[in-house]
Image (spheres, rainbow, N blue to C red):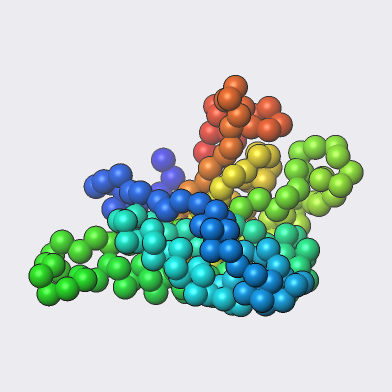
Length: 235
């Protein structure tokens, strides 16, 4: 087993002691607030949930608090699509680090607030620690395919795209980095490598939690099964 160095392993230490419960669907929770284009900062950003951390952070805070109130251990940042490729749709590709850092700081502030005792009757010895997971979703590309539109990105470009996002999340104070909803095994490898580059850049080393999305047959969209995924990613 490779000996890894961490500058923050609070999350892993807690995970050794108990099952940690994550929050739920950020997008659905925001949709339920019936936000308008004005909340998103104008028509050009309408529907860009990740930009709400800047244009209307109250909406994101409301979602985070709703999960903290019912006792979740881990908040996910509102950054599922906050990468350069996806944010280009809204002309926000040059604000990626700002958006990720802002989202992480918001979640961090609330996680820390709810890690404190709520009132004098609650013993500080029994405070529930809350953690922040930096959410890294897919780029919308499928680099393993031959599709001219979905594969028109190089592996190195993907690595740098996710490096940039990770730098913002790390600067904002997340406890771990969460790669989620991956359909293409290459797009799980790319963020892992990008995150390691971000670690070297920031000199902050955190746990990485990588997820793959499987269909009912137990395979990823392009046919990779869970055993192959583990073999590819374990190193």
